Length: 414
Image (tube, rainbow, N blue to C red; front, side):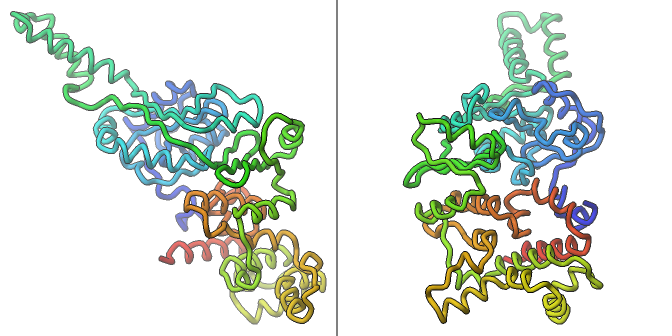
């Protein structure tokens, strides 16, 4: 992971915490019922998730109270606009954007001497079956301050009101109470410490609950796509919900996505896309076994590329060049069957969100397509960082170098 860190592709753009900020973070963890971290220095993302704390606890989702109830911690206004590295839902990043948009000034004020615990509540205490996800219609975002600062503000305001009554301004005990409160909490008068809960609508989304489920709404018919096969097998026994069910490996899923105008594919156009070049490079790297050159050099040097391409077995060469071979044969004989020549995973990977979709839906469909066929390393990095980081560790070092260089080039493209 050191190479990713040096390239600022892992753990970058995070907010560093130490000293009093780290102490406040632990107070937020205590409020959530989570054991304090022993780390004195660590970093957090836009939701308050820390890679160092997650590693310490051996739990990437230590901020959650069960699958239906994720939480966030806001320690600093610097978290605004920061990435969300370990979301429980596809909408978590948008929620944090909505929070900072609605309460940017209040957050700046509160975090001067306090911190916020943010509860993302779907009004579901616990999940019992995957169809509970159909209840997701609105999410209620509520806030709680550490040190009960809101209550201390009310108490301080009462003391001030009492001070102005009659001759109370000469009451030494009252003086002392005001001084003690001011020393401990500062002057809380006039500060906006109460944040009204937000209610936000939820349409289509992905959740990691039940092993990972995509719920696609607002189309011809609601569709649920399961990543866990055992959960899917339980779900198909249900006869009470009018929803289409698929496991992510089902070939019928791609047909349904295109029939419902959720995804689309144009094989002729696909061959001219950077996406296709990356997919072919990835598949080529997987096929290379014994090589005398680093994989990043092979993929970048046309002479080496051709050399090792010709050293592949006929079967592997046909797999790698299957789409070109199919289009050539199709031009001669329109009865040529695509499935006889083009690998299914390659065919699936070349789909893209339907052009009619709203941007929010397009991003979710990209995530779904990437989960169906995770063979584009750039899309894996964009849409499923957790899987990218775990898969990255299995790649050969020279292929890791190629992927890093490729991602950095794409990031710099306007």
